[in-house]
Image (tube, rainbow, N blue to C red; front, side, top):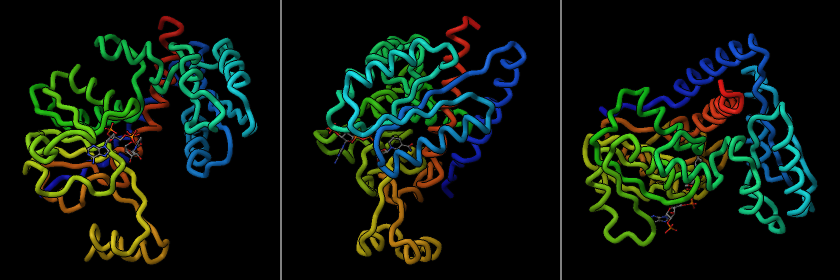
Length: 304
Ligand code: NDP
């Protein structure tokens, strides 16, 4: 039977380790700090930032939530980031995306000091990752590697197929897998005969943003499936396609009128050797790795 990989338990273990490290650093007079910049009132963004700030508190990190008005200009955001780059108690800068249209997101992310770039989005860190040098890497891809390592799933020598080539998930996870000596193929919307490629995968990472796109016939039996997708479905027909006969989901769908499905059809999990469920697989790792990166940035900046 396919093994469900418990992302929440792995995230809890990482957070406990981070809290220990924060205590050790406190004894040396260092308190890692995270600045979270949140513009506007997108409910999902507000929820993510709230939970990032709350987790800082739980683990003993300093945090500062800065919420410029929705009308903020690129120049004002650039000045804000510059001031955070200069503040000594800030080790990590997180700019919650998406930003309002008038703000030049790329220019702004380039303004974050690479030493405080705990999201790993700066081109300097992306370049270091590609060159196989120590770098702050994006949190979700780092979390995926943690799940594999802590679940005893070998990476070296394995055929890894990553579906999705975003700068946030697909490309960096492919680089991390390559740096760990997997044989990596990256697929995207122009890939021909996607199923023929995904069926080769010992480790299949789906980071697409399309509900249940990876179907059972696209999976090699026994493969490890890492399902990064978070797709909210509200239509009964979609629900039936993915969860017909699933009593727990039926009850929660009836109550809430929606549910979350990954990029992999739930029936495809049944063929896997191991898989990350949605929710509860990759999702919980993102904040844990943000905390871990902030502590790492604090240590690197002080040469510890
Ligand atoms: P993007 O939209 O930035 O990238 C999606 C990628 O999927 C693109 O490279 C695109 O190809 C590819 N793609 C789209 N359609 C197809 C198709 N039919 N066949 C093959 N490839 C396809 O998404 P993200 O990388 O930001 O996110 C992906 C998913 O992961 C989303 O569901 C998101 O919500 C989730 N996510 C989850 C996180 C977590 O914490 N668990 C964190 C971040 C994201 P092309 O480049 O050719 O357009």
